[in-house]
Figure 1: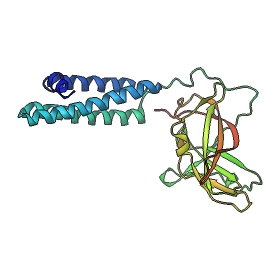
Figure 2: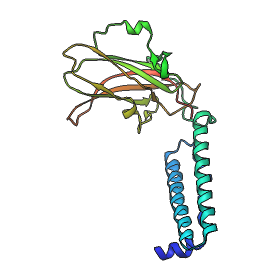
Figure 3: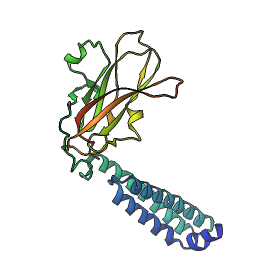
Figure 4: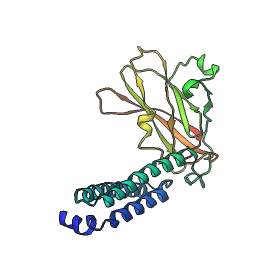
Length: 251
């Protein structure tokens, strides 16, 4: 393997450069894709060529070919910085390329609520409406809120628990039962629960969570399920579900 790298990769100083530029182009093309397989492949290809070009540059320096080594390392540095800038820019201001909700219709004969709006406080903290702050619940319930951008949400939970644990959301597009933001939603929507001594207590998020599927201006129906995992237990318990009209976060 080492001999193969020396013969076909390291000695051909231009080959790692071409592979890196090709992987950077592939990454740029698929950065807004909703296909996770393509995203994972392009990310893995880019990481591989970054390591390869780094090794090639160091190898050239060791062999005394300083100008070639510095050239490779300089292009690697410039390329990585450029990709970071492009990725950051596209995440903030990128074009509308998420087609998830393009052909979705709001389901009929299902009660769909709308998330309540919050006012933005310092550090983008969502300030709940007075009508919610003053309400007293007598049964388990939750309320979803719009945060400072479409696709970003917060929630309040009124809960009665005899155990310490954690609650979190699972969300599904209603018409096709597609789980939403499955890899991140559990962690980002988690709230720590302490024993409430047989009374209904209000818990709230202190940061927003994101639904990535869809884009601004493309509403669709989603079912939000509250799940509870007691400490030191494997079982997760579904507590409650409600249907909302939501939008995805524009990447």
